[in-house]
Image 1 (spheres, rainbow, N blue to C red):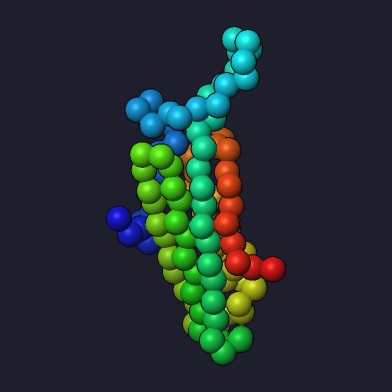
Image 2: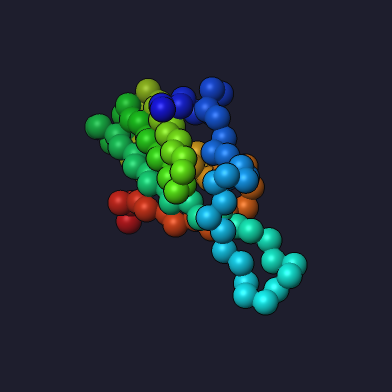
Length: 104
């Protein structure tokens, strides 16, 4: 499923009861379940500055969401960080996030 950000993208449904592969603190009855989500991001621009784009994939054990977009005039660094921001904006509740990026 390919989602366009920001306007038509659906938020990753971390809160669905069927999807909860949750972490709990042993022995803590007040612990809140926190889903695990992996976010893969990339951004590019050619030439730099020039036209560029970004992509982000969010993976949950039972669900996947993607978003992408671009700008006519931008920089490589802007697209790299924009991908991370868009990925985090797709979350609709607190999650344990593992972020993967090739940006230095």
